[in-house]
Image (cartoon, rainbow, N blue to C red):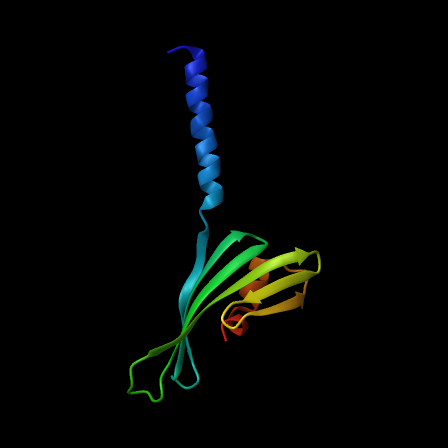
Length: 120
């Protein structure tokens, strides 16, 4: 193999690692929160795309009394995006809702500080 072929192969491998790294999101948190005296359950998975962009995928289950099985009420996605230096946008699907939080924190810091408020 000549030098040009080796350099071309190494360049292609380097570029593929760069593209693959930007496509894959990292799961940073998952779990279950039970509330309302055992009648409401929220399953969640949180993934981070960057420090300024966080997605929370939730499934909310309810039941009428403790002895009944869980019924899926709704699935919801919550997205935290840092809009500018002092504003964080919180977008909720199902029901569609957009809120602004005035904070200096990035999306990941805000998530860890207000995690249980966001999951309600």
